[in-house]
Amino acid sequence: MKMDEQIRSMREQIEAAAAAITDSREMHQLRKQYLDNKTGLISALMKNMRDLSPEERPAFGKIVNELKTWALEFFTAQDARLKAAELAAKNASEQIDVTMPASAHCCGALHPNTLIANELIDIFAGMGFTVFEGPEIENDYYNFTALNTPKDHPARDMQDTFYVSPELLLRTQTSAGQIRVMENTKPPIKILSPGKVFRSDDDATHSPMFSQMEGLVVDKGITLCDLQGMLDVFAARVFGEGVRTRLRPSYFPFTEPSVEVDVSCFSCGGKGCRLCKDTGWIEVLGAGMVNRKVLENCGIDPDVYTGFAFGMGIERIAMLKYGIPNIKMLFESDVRVLTQFRG
Ligand code: PHE
Image (cartoon, rainbow, N blue to C red):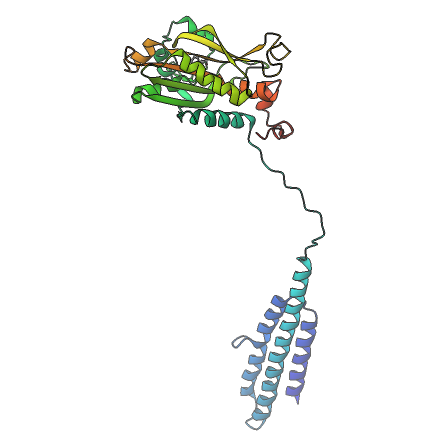
């Protein structure tokens, strides 16, 4: 009868231990502790049979088997109970209140520079231009010398240059890309070259890093009229129908003749206002006919081919078009500023 007691107390132990458990994984551990075929405490009882007399053995075997059957059912029931409770808790925690107001998702916006660059590419691509992007670190030859600006040329002072080494520099103008294209392409050439440029210059309208958009056309019979015709399309598309262009004589070493291009003031229509400083005109870019020497430097015969080039500051166009007073606002990444522009 000692055996009976042992069995009964084991059953009580199981029930007491199970009552304290609220987690199905822990219950599984408890199940293993008693029912594991090798190490389980119930299996261990069977081994005790060896110590019994042959007469006692059948009765003992029977009650241990009953205990085992009971334990199997008990643990199955416990497992079902705990799993059901766990599922209910999980469902409750995942419940969604469909009446809650939706949280606002704010959409990203393109940077004003990107908007302008995309707009320009769109306009000129419509006229047959393709995009070429040159490197930001240039050598002296492409940025200056090949553009008819040799080492001691006074025009080098027009752009305060960041040098990386005596021969390497951060490009001061996307015009460097003109040479890279003309060296490798036979006319007709019609490219647009956007990119960052660098100059040691810093005030409300100048930043040491800014972006330019270069244009270059080389073919037989290209004239200044072709340049102005294309710029008229550009001015009307970017600043509005009715905006006209005006060419003023200027100087760049790589164009001859060179011009500054003004657009009629899109704010006052040309009558005179604060934006155009009462002149009716706003300067937007530099341009000109590609200098014969530059064509020669690239192996293009200037007696057969002519071309025009233009270069504009993208930030300047963005500031004019969106009324941005300080160029730094375009680089400070203040979302309160940037989210105002959506093209
Ligand atoms: N590269 C000139 C500048 O940065 C602009 C320009 C480009 C002028 C092409 C003429 C032709 O000031």
